[in-house]
Length: 342
Ligand code: NAD
Ligand code: ZN
Ligand code: ZN
Image (cartoon, rainbow, N blue to C red; front, top):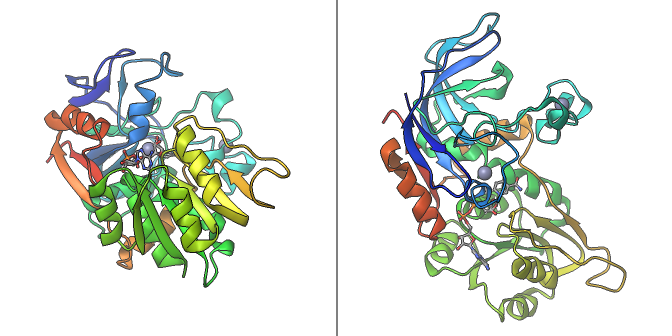
Protein backbone atom coordinates (compact mmCIF):
# COMPACT_ATOMS: atom_id res chain seq x y z
CA UNK A 1 0.00 0.00 0.00
CA UNK A 2 0.97 3.65 -0.29
CA UNK A 3 1.98 5.48 2.88
CA UNK A 4 3.44 8.90 3.63
CA UNK A 5 6.55 8.53 5.72
CA UNK A 6 9.12 10.57 7.55
CA UNK A 7 12.18 8.48 6.70
CA UNK A 8 15.10 10.06 8.52
CA UNK A 9 15.91 13.10 10.63
CA UNK A 10 15.88 16.21 8.45
CA UNK A 11 14.16 14.60 5.46
CA UNK A 12 10.86 15.77 3.92
CA UNK A 13 7.79 13.50 4.05
CA UNK A 14 7.60 11.14 1.08
CA UNK A 15 5.12 8.76 -0.53
CA UNK A 16 6.40 5.18 -0.34
CA UNK A 17 5.07 1.67 -0.87
CA UNK A 18 5.04 -0.54 2.24
CA UNK A 19 3.63 -4.03 2.89
CA UNK A 20 -0.14 -4.17 3.44
CA UNK A 21 -0.70 -4.41 7.22
CA UNK A 22 -2.65 -7.31 8.70
CA UNK A 23 -4.48 -7.15 12.01
CA UNK A 24 -2.99 -9.27 14.80
CA UNK A 25 -5.01 -10.50 17.79
CA UNK A 26 -7.10 -7.67 19.25
CA UNK A 27 -6.30 -5.24 16.42
CA UNK A 28 -8.52 -3.56 13.84
CA UNK A 29 -7.52 -2.80 10.24
CA UNK A 30 -9.05 0.38 8.81
CA UNK A 31 -9.27 1.45 5.19
CA UNK A 32 -8.43 5.12 5.69
CA UNK A 33 -11.07 7.55 4.42
CA UNK A 34 -9.44 10.74 5.69
CA UNK A 35 -6.32 11.83 7.60
CA UNK A 36 -5.53 15.32 8.91
CA UNK A 37 -2.21 17.14 8.69
CA UNK A 38 -1.17 18.74 12.00
CA UNK A 39 1.54 21.28 12.75
CA UNK A 40 2.89 18.95 15.47
CA UNK A 41 4.24 16.72 12.68
CA UNK A 42 6.29 19.66 11.45
CA UNK A 43 7.58 20.22 14.98
CA UNK A 44 8.51 16.52 15.29
CA UNK A 45 10.28 16.61 11.92
CA UNK A 46 12.38 19.57 13.10
CA UNK A 47 13.74 17.76 16.17
CA UNK A 48 17.42 16.70 15.97
CA UNK A 49 16.41 13.30 17.37
CA UNK A 50 13.06 11.48 17.42
CA UNK A 51 11.90 9.50 20.47
CA UNK A 52 10.64 6.72 18.15
CA UNK A 53 12.14 4.62 15.37
CA UNK A 54 12.14 5.86 11.75
CA UNK A 55 10.77 5.53 9.12
CA UNK A 56 7.43 6.60 10.55
CA UNK A 57 4.11 6.66 8.71
CA UNK A 58 2.69 10.10 9.54
CA UNK A 59 -0.84 11.13 10.48
CA UNK A 60 -2.37 11.25 13.97
CA UNK A 61 -5.83 12.39 12.87
CA UNK A 62 -7.47 9.38 11.24
CA UNK A 63 -10.85 8.09 10.11
CA UNK A 64 -11.66 4.97 8.14
CA UNK A 65 -13.94 2.03 7.55
CA UNK A 66 -13.44 -1.30 9.28
CA UNK A 67 -11.70 -3.53 6.72
CA UNK A 68 -10.79 -6.52 8.92
CA UNK A 69 -10.53 -7.43 12.58
CA UNK A 70 -7.99 -9.57 14.40
CA UNK A 71 -8.72 -12.56 16.59
CA UNK A 72 -10.92 -11.77 19.57
CA UNK A 73 -12.29 -8.45 18.31
CA UNK A 74 -16.04 -8.13 18.65
CA UNK A 75 -18.59 -5.34 18.47
CA UNK A 76 -17.58 -3.79 15.15
CA UNK A 77 -19.28 -4.18 11.77
CA UNK A 78 -17.14 -4.62 8.67
CA UNK A 79 -17.45 -1.40 6.63
CA UNK A 80 -18.43 0.67 9.69
CA UNK A 81 -17.21 4.30 9.51
CA UNK A 82 -15.14 5.29 12.55
CA UNK A 83 -12.80 7.99 13.86
CA UNK A 84 -9.59 7.07 15.67
CA UNK A 85 -8.92 8.33 19.20
CA UNK A 86 -5.17 9.00 18.90
CA UNK A 87 -3.57 9.31 22.35
CA UNK A 88 -3.39 5.60 23.08
CA UNK A 89 -2.66 4.50 26.64
CA UNK A 90 -2.46 1.25 28.58
CA UNK A 91 -6.23 1.18 29.11
CA UNK A 92 -6.04 0.19 32.77
CA UNK A 93 -4.14 2.78 34.87
CA UNK A 94 -6.08 5.39 36.87
CA UNK A 95 -6.01 8.00 34.10
CA UNK A 96 -6.93 5.48 31.37
CA UNK A 97 -9.75 4.19 33.58
CA UNK A 98 -11.15 7.72 33.53
CA UNK A 99 -10.92 7.76 29.74
CA UNK A 100 -7.94 10.15 29.90
CA UNK A 101 -5.60 7.93 27.90
CA UNK A 102 -3.84 11.13 26.85
CA UNK A 103 -2.48 11.20 30.40
CA UNK A 104 -1.76 7.45 30.69
CA UNK A 105 0.60 6.86 33.58
CA UNK A 106 2.27 3.86 31.96
CA UNK A 107 2.48 4.67 28.22
CA UNK A 108 6.16 5.65 28.47
CA UNK A 109 7.16 2.59 30.45
CA UNK A 110 5.20 0.26 28.13
CA UNK A 111 6.39 1.96 24.93
CA UNK A 112 2.85 2.80 23.81
CA UNK A 113 2.82 5.60 21.24
CA UNK A 114 0.05 7.27 19.24
CA UNK A 115 -0.43 6.43 15.57
CA UNK A 116 1.60 8.87 13.47
CA UNK A 117 3.68 9.84 16.51
CA UNK A 118 5.50 6.56 17.03
CA UNK A 119 3.13 3.85 15.79
CA UNK A 120 2.30 3.73 12.05
CA UNK A 121 -0.14 6.57 11.33
CA UNK A 122 -3.17 7.41 9.23
CA UNK A 123 -1.65 8.94 6.09
CA UNK A 124 -1.68 5.58 4.32
CA UNK A 125 -4.23 3.50 2.46
CA UNK A 126 -4.71 1.29 5.52
CA UNK A 127 -3.93 1.68 9.20
CA UNK A 128 -3.78 -0.65 12.18
CA UNK A 129 -5.55 0.31 15.37
CA UNK A 130 -4.32 -1.51 18.48
CA UNK A 131 -7.66 -1.89 20.18
CA UNK A 132 -11.33 -1.34 19.22
CA UNK A 133 -11.72 0.96 22.24
CA UNK A 134 -9.73 3.58 20.28
CA UNK A 135 -12.54 3.80 17.70
CA UNK A 136 -15.55 6.08 17.85
CA UNK A 137 -18.38 5.33 15.36
CA UNK A 138 -19.04 8.35 13.15
CA UNK A 139 -22.73 7.45 12.80
CA UNK A 140 -23.37 9.41 9.63
CA UNK A 141 -20.86 12.23 10.20
CA UNK A 142 -18.76 12.92 7.10
CA UNK A 143 -15.22 11.59 7.77
CA UNK A 144 -13.49 14.17 5.55
CA UNK A 145 -15.20 17.09 7.21
CA UNK A 146 -14.79 15.74 10.74
CA UNK A 147 -11.55 13.71 10.90
CA UNK A 148 -9.64 16.68 12.32
CA UNK A 149 -11.96 16.85 15.28
CA UNK A 150 -9.88 13.92 16.63
CA UNK A 151 -7.07 16.43 17.35
CA UNK A 152 -7.76 19.95 16.01
CA UNK A 153 -11.17 19.64 17.70
CA UNK A 154 -10.39 17.45 20.72
CA UNK A 155 -7.27 19.35 21.86
CA UNK A 156 -8.92 22.81 22.03
CA UNK A 157 -12.09 21.22 23.48
CA UNK A 158 -10.10 19.70 26.36
CA UNK A 159 -8.33 23.03 26.97
CA UNK A 160 -11.54 25.07 26.80
CA UNK A 161 -13.57 22.68 28.94
CA UNK A 162 -11.14 23.18 31.81
CA UNK A 163 -11.52 26.96 31.57
CA UNK A 164 -15.31 27.12 31.19
CA UNK A 165 -16.01 28.06 34.86
CA UNK A 166 -14.10 31.32 34.19
CA UNK A 167 -16.01 32.13 31.00
CA UNK A 168 -19.09 33.62 32.61
CA UNK A 169 -21.33 36.25 30.97
CA UNK A 170 -19.32 39.43 30.48
CA UNK A 171 -15.99 37.56 30.25
CA UNK A 172 -13.53 37.49 27.34
CA UNK A 173 -11.34 34.78 25.85
CA UNK A 174 -8.29 35.24 23.62
CA UNK A 175 -7.26 32.72 20.97
CA UNK A 176 -3.69 33.15 19.75
CA UNK A 177 -3.08 31.44 16.37
CA UNK A 178 -6.27 30.69 14.47
CA UNK A 179 -4.94 27.89 12.26
CA UNK A 180 -6.09 24.26 12.36
CA UNK A 181 -6.68 24.10 16.12
CA UNK A 182 -7.38 27.79 16.68
CA UNK A 183 -10.21 28.18 14.16
CA UNK A 184 -11.99 25.26 15.82
CA UNK A 185 -11.28 26.78 19.26
CA UNK A 186 -13.09 29.97 18.24
CA UNK A 187 -16.17 27.94 17.29
CA UNK A 188 -16.04 25.85 20.48
CA UNK A 189 -15.82 28.99 22.62
CA UNK A 190 -18.81 30.49 20.83
CA UNK A 191 -20.79 27.25 21.19
CA UNK A 192 -19.93 26.59 24.84
CA UNK A 193 -19.65 30.01 26.46
CA UNK A 194 -21.05 33.54 26.38
CA UNK A 195 -17.48 34.99 26.33
CA UNK A 196 -16.38 37.68 23.93
CA UNK A 197 -13.84 35.95 21.68
CA UNK A 198 -10.77 37.87 20.53
CA UNK A 199 -8.56 36.18 17.93
CA UNK A 200 -4.92 37.12 17.34
CA UNK A 201 -2.95 35.93 14.32
CA UNK A 202 -0.05 37.19 12.22
CA UNK A 203 -1.86 36.30 9.00
CA UNK A 204 -4.67 38.35 7.48
CA UNK A 205 -6.28 35.25 5.91
CA UNK A 206 -6.33 33.46 9.28
CA UNK A 207 -7.86 36.53 10.95
CA UNK A 208 -10.54 36.61 8.25
CA UNK A 209 -11.27 32.93 8.87
CA UNK A 210 -11.44 33.59 12.63
CA UNK A 211 -14.02 36.31 12.09
CA UNK A 212 -15.97 34.14 9.66
CA UNK A 213 -16.21 31.31 12.20
CA UNK A 214 -17.36 33.57 15.02
CA UNK A 215 -14.61 35.66 16.60
CA UNK A 216 -15.96 39.01 17.80
CA UNK A 217 -12.61 40.64 17.09
CA UNK A 218 -9.58 39.51 15.09
CA UNK A 219 -6.44 41.57 15.57
CA UNK A 220 -2.87 41.33 14.27
CA UNK A 221 -0.60 39.44 16.66
CA UNK A 222 2.10 42.13 16.90
CA UNK A 223 3.83 44.34 19.51
CA UNK A 224 0.66 46.39 20.00
CA UNK A 225 -1.64 43.37 20.50
CA UNK A 226 -1.34 43.12 24.29
CA UNK A 227 -2.14 46.79 24.80
CA UNK A 228 -5.09 46.63 22.42
CA UNK A 229 -6.57 43.57 24.12
CA UNK A 230 -6.09 45.10 27.58
CA UNK A 231 -7.70 48.28 26.31
CA UNK A 232 -10.72 46.32 25.11
CA UNK A 233 -11.06 44.09 28.17
CA UNK A 234 -8.91 45.19 31.09
CA UNK A 235 -7.46 41.66 31.15
CA UNK A 236 -9.19 38.50 29.94
CA UNK A 237 -10.50 35.47 31.82
CA UNK A 238 -8.94 32.82 29.55
CA UNK A 239 -6.18 32.71 26.95
CA UNK A 240 -5.53 29.84 24.55
CA UNK A 241 -2.12 29.94 22.89
CA UNK A 242 -1.98 27.70 19.80
CA UNK A 243 1.53 28.86 18.86
CA UNK A 244 3.47 28.55 22.12
CA UNK A 245 6.65 30.38 21.12
CA UNK A 246 8.26 32.74 23.66
CA UNK A 247 6.65 35.78 22.05
CA UNK A 248 3.11 34.37 22.18
CA UNK A 249 3.51 32.95 25.69
CA UNK A 250 4.51 36.45 26.84
CA UNK A 251 1.54 37.88 24.93
CA UNK A 252 -0.74 35.32 26.60
CA UNK A 253 0.34 36.23 30.13
CA UNK A 254 0.31 39.97 29.26
CA UNK A 255 -3.40 39.88 28.31
CA UNK A 256 -4.43 37.57 31.17
CA UNK A 257 -6.48 39.13 34.00
CA UNK A 258 -6.79 38.24 37.69
CA UNK A 259 -7.89 34.63 38.35
CA UNK A 260 -7.43 33.84 34.67
CA UNK A 261 -6.62 30.55 32.98
CA UNK A 262 -3.75 30.54 30.48
CA UNK A 263 -3.62 27.42 28.33
CA UNK A 264 -0.38 26.85 26.45
CA UNK A 265 -1.28 24.38 23.69
CA UNK A 266 1.23 25.20 20.95
CA UNK A 267 4.52 23.32 21.18
CA UNK A 268 6.76 26.28 20.33
CA UNK A 269 8.93 25.81 23.43
CA UNK A 270 8.00 29.14 25.07
CA UNK A 271 8.15 29.39 28.87
CA UNK A 272 5.77 31.41 31.07
CA UNK A 273 6.94 33.36 34.09
CA UNK A 274 4.75 32.72 37.12
CA UNK A 275 5.35 33.95 40.66
CA UNK A 276 3.98 36.25 43.30
CA UNK A 277 3.94 39.82 42.01
CA UNK A 278 4.68 38.68 38.47
CA UNK A 279 1.55 39.04 36.41
CA UNK A 280 -2.00 39.17 37.76
CA UNK A 281 -3.08 37.59 41.07
CA UNK A 282 -4.12 33.97 40.88
CA UNK A 283 -3.40 33.43 37.19
CA UNK A 284 -3.05 29.73 36.44
CA UNK A 285 -0.93 28.54 33.56
CA UNK A 286 -1.37 25.04 32.15
CA UNK A 287 0.06 23.03 29.27
CA UNK A 288 -2.63 20.51 28.29
CA UNK A 289 -2.13 17.59 25.92
CA UNK A 290 -4.79 16.30 23.50
CA UNK A 291 -8.02 15.09 25.24
CA UNK A 292 -9.91 12.16 26.70
CA UNK A 293 -11.97 9.52 24.90
CA UNK A 294 -15.24 10.82 26.28
CA UNK A 295 -14.29 14.35 25.20
CA UNK A 296 -13.82 13.07 21.63
CA UNK A 297 -17.34 11.68 21.74
CA UNK A 298 -18.56 15.05 23.01
CA UNK A 299 -16.77 16.97 20.25
CA UNK A 300 -18.31 14.72 17.61
CA UNK A 301 -21.71 15.43 19.16
CA UNK A 302 -21.04 19.15 18.75
CA UNK A 303 -20.37 18.53 15.04
CA UNK A 304 -23.61 16.56 14.86
CA UNK A 305 -25.41 19.51 16.45
CA UNK A 306 -23.99 21.70 13.66
CA UNK A 307 -21.97 24.06 15.85
CA UNK A 308 -18.44 23.15 14.73
CA UNK A 309 -17.39 23.02 11.13
CA UNK A 310 -13.72 22.43 10.24
CA UNK A 311 -12.53 24.50 7.28
CA UNK A 312 -11.00 21.73 5.15
CA UNK A 313 -8.67 21.64 2.11
CA UNK A 314 -8.40 18.13 0.61
CA UNK A 315 -5.43 16.43 -1.06
CA UNK A 316 -4.79 12.99 -2.60
CA UNK A 317 -2.11 10.83 -0.98
CA UNK A 318 0.44 11.71 -3.68
CA UNK A 319 -0.04 15.38 -2.82
CA UNK A 320 0.49 14.89 0.94
CA UNK A 321 4.12 16.12 0.86
CA UNK A 322 2.81 19.31 -0.80
CA UNK A 323 0.21 19.72 1.95
CA UNK A 324 3.03 19.55 4.56
CA UNK A 325 5.03 22.14 2.58
CA UNK A 326 2.01 24.45 2.45
CA UNK A 327 1.37 24.01 6.19
CA UNK A 328 5.02 24.77 6.94
CA UNK A 329 4.75 27.94 4.82
CA UNK A 330 1.61 29.05 6.71
CA UNK A 331 -0.53 28.66 3.59
CA UNK A 332 -3.21 26.25 4.86
CA UNK A 333 -6.29 28.16 6.00
CA UNK A 334 -8.07 25.72 8.31
CA UNK A 335 -6.91 22.09 8.02
CA UNK A 336 -5.37 20.02 5.21
CA UNK A 337 -7.00 16.59 4.97
CA UNK A 338 -5.50 13.73 2.94
CA UNK A 339 -7.82 11.24 1.20
CA UNK A 340 -5.56 8.16 0.82
CA UNK A 341 -8.22 6.17 -1.03
CA UNK A 342 -10.01 9.14 -2.62
P1 NAD B 1 -1.38 25.75 12.19
O1 NAD B 1 -0.12 25.96 11.47
O2 NAD B 1 -2.57 25.25 11.47
O3 NAD B 1 -1.81 27.09 12.96
C1 NAD B 1 -0.91 27.93 13.61
C2 NAD B 1 -1.45 29.35 13.49
O4 NAD B 1 -0.64 30.22 14.27
C3 NAD B 1 -1.45 29.90 12.07
O5 NAD B 1 -2.70 30.47 11.77
C4 NAD B 1 -0.35 30.97 12.11
O6 NAD B 1 -0.60 32.06 11.20
C5 NAD B 1 -0.45 31.41 13.54
N1 NAD B 1 0.74 32.08 14.07
C6 NAD B 1 2.05 31.84 13.82
N2 NAD B 1 2.84 32.69 14.54
C7 NAD B 1 1.98 33.46 15.27
C8 NAD B 1 2.16 34.51 16.21
N3 NAD B 1 3.39 34.95 16.55
N4 NAD B 1 1.06 35.07 16.77
C9 NAD B 1 -0.19 34.64 16.45
N5 NAD B 1 -0.41 33.66 15.55
C10 NAD B 1 0.66 33.08 14.97
O7 NAD B 1 -1.03 24.75 13.40
P2 NAD B 1 -1.98 23.73 14.21
O8 NAD B 1 -1.96 22.40 13.53
O9 NAD B 1 -3.26 24.41 14.50
O10 NAD B 1 -1.17 23.55 15.57
C11 NAD B 1 -1.04 24.65 16.46
C12 NAD B 1 -0.03 24.31 17.57
O11 NAD B 1 -0.60 23.39 18.48
C13 NAD B 1 1.26 23.68 17.08
O12 NAD B 1 2.33 24.14 17.89
C14 NAD B 1 1.02 22.20 17.34
O13 NAD B 1 2.23 21.48 17.42
C15 NAD B 1 0.29 22.29 18.64
N6 NAD B 1 -0.53 21.14 19.05
C16 NAD B 1 -0.51 20.83 20.37
C17 NAD B 1 -1.31 19.80 20.84
C18 NAD B 1 -1.34 19.50 22.30
O14 NAD B 1 -1.93 18.48 22.67
N7 NAD B 1 -0.78 20.34 23.17
C19 NAD B 1 -2.10 19.06 19.95
C20 NAD B 1 -2.10 19.42 18.60
C21 NAD B 1 -1.31 20.47 18.15
ZN1 ZN C 1 -1.77 17.17 16.25
ZN1 ZN D 1 -2.87 4.03 31.20
